Image 1 (spheres, rainbow, N blue to C red):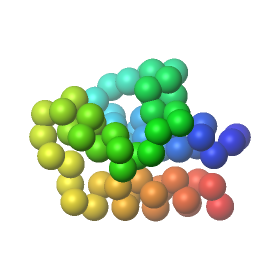
Image 2 (cartoon, rainbow, N blue to C red; image 1 turned 60 degrees about the vertical axis):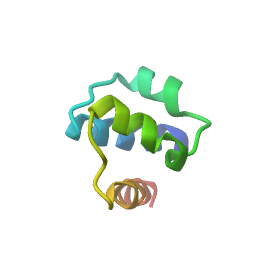
Image 3 (cartoon, rainbow, N blue to C red; image 1 turned 45 degrees about the vertical axis):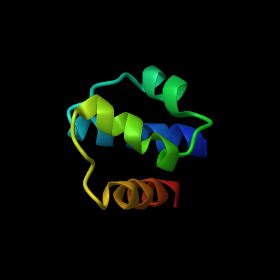
Length: 68
């Protein structure tokens, strides 16, 4: 499994936790090739609230755990 696929898998899970349901394909089509930092505002707008301050750090932690 390549790193972009792992990243999108982790992202899909975390979006689901926020109440935003997307298919794996939707996540990959929307986010691949973009930085997570640049997409935080879009995610916030979709869930209708600000993300927790540590959300991006948590994403990196989960992704890195799956990559190792």
